[in-house]
Length: 153
Image (cartoon, rainbow, N blue to C red; front, side, top):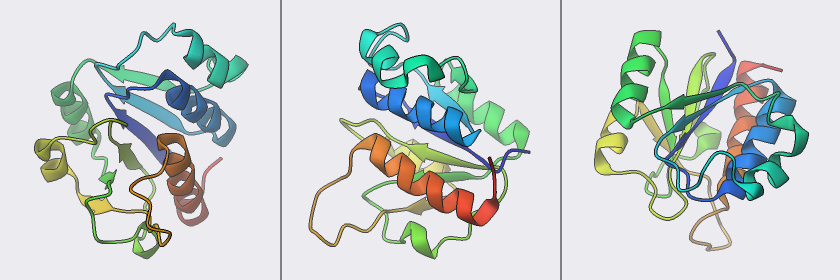
């Protein structure tokens, strides 16, 4: 089983997704996209941000939240939601091999049903007072800590 995978819930911005796919290719982790995305997977911004790494990134697309959940439960994977609505810091979490690190839409996060399905909800502390981090930056924070703890690459 992989050290961890990244999952994006209906991402809005092709450039962020491309950057995450590039990072995932470099780290050797998978990316799951819960559709619909707010852009076409052939989008120029996705290709520009992902460069030639897109073909290297293990990418799985799920046609809906329900399809993703069916797959996840069948695979026995723990769902770790990163959200600004959580109180627990990701730095206080013990990551496990096989975790799925889920990030919501740039514009709206995730709906309540997704929050309820998560096994744990974590936040990235922002002592500077900002509202939220860029999606690709947040995914990099999470991937770094999960890799440090659970191994990988």
